[in-house]
Length: 414
Ligand SMILES: Cc1cc2nc3c(=O)[nH]c(=O)nc-3n(C[C@H](O)[C@H](O)[C@H](O)COP(=O)(O)OP(=O)(O)OC[C@H]3O[C@@H](n4cnc5c(N)ncnc54)[C@H](O)[C@@H]3O)c2cc1C
Image (cartoon, rainbow, N blue to C red):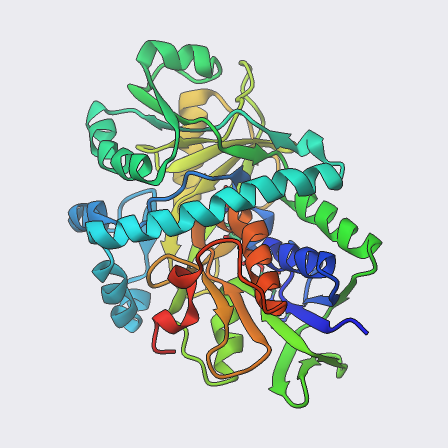
């Protein structure tokens, strides 16, 4: 009989883990309180990145800190009360802003992203949703020459990690993206990065594959987790699921669930928003574009141009605060002529972020048969498949396809 595995959390990370474990011969149940893919994995910018190797806590953050602390930037806002309550976490986060630690993170992420992008391409083909995939790369654009100059420090880290990119000047940007107004001084096109035009449909397609191969999806809240002759997962409905092994992949809720077993995971969340706008009366955008000085991303989606925001550090379940989104939307409309909002309400998600900006992938230190797969921060859509491959290798007691030491749970005293 095949071993039974429960995946806790059905975001893109959990769904990919479920698919990989199933393909390896496990009998897999995927549990989420919602339809899979309806939290953070629903509303991202759709970038399938193999290039986002420069973590937020890099040396440049220290230089930018005095300005960011004023709490007026469109790309970053925080609740002072939240920062005060979590001061220890923030100080630890800042302690990673060294060249050596930034380089270490870049190489670790690059390895995971590269295997993930290959796997996404194969899964997209298998799921027959090639229409969602685009190959035109991912563009960073700079309004000010000084911002491009600052970005050169990141380009050095990208070089070091083997990321390919091309630099375009003001006149060339028009040929690359004729739909953009000529307000940009420089652009950096990350050539190999891909994107999807509907992240929710991508997750749905992967879930379809999983179901078609005999996988089980349960929509219910996980309320308890206990190790007893294998694992017992308690659900809100009163149902109990008994399995041999468990993978915790509940995004921003993972630390809370792990705390039921006594783990203290140094994880917070970075909230982010989106809203779709009617496209402009101009050539359509070809790819997701990060307006670095504007502090937002414009991503062409099936439903319109998705404007996604930067980072908001605030209580996970506090009511939404649309300040950053409203500013981003009015900037994008003014500068690019986008039309009215398409959706009635903006969307909000929570990026799960560990203190060193790397995900936690590996066996739980004090519990046999429990595996951690969370903390994918800004690039969980990109890194879901590779993370699933890593966890499946561990479930099978085999060597993972990449070095997972940088992601080990034991790197923190949890
Ligand atoms: C604005 C924005 C833009 C982004 N853009 C990109 C991008 O372009 N490319 C990229 O790679 N990444 C991007 N990201 C990041 C990416 O979306 C996340 O890293 C990724 O979605 C995390 O996936 P996850 O499966 O870990 O978490 P989630 O998608 O949040 O899934 C966790 C799941 O666990 C479930 N859950 C939690 N607790 C319980 C419980 N007790 N019982 C049952 N179920 C539970 C939740 O319902 C949820 O479905 C972006 C994020 C944001 C916010």
